Image (cartoon, rainbow, N blue to C red):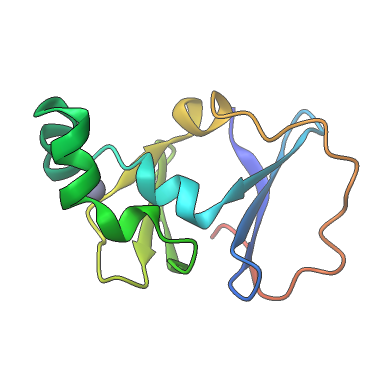
Length: 117
Ligand SMILES: [Zn+2]
């Protein structure tokens, strides 16, 4: 499953994904940052919750934003965050598992549009 369109609202801190099956998913930037799957973040989490909370302090901040999106082939999405973190690649299946569905909101009011290329 791949998205038809991705809208990145940097001002509000939301990423909206329109999927091919018609479902719309909204994900918070700060939440995405905390979900990062790169080896650095994963190893930090594996070291323990307290440790991770300390070392990933910036991830907990609501102010963190997705500043760039890069499609990684048919596999997923690479997100570049405002805190400089850019190692995270988010497979589509992983994003689909994160919830954020069932919101009957459209992306009409969202600023900033990234169309997959
Ligand atoms: Zn990471």
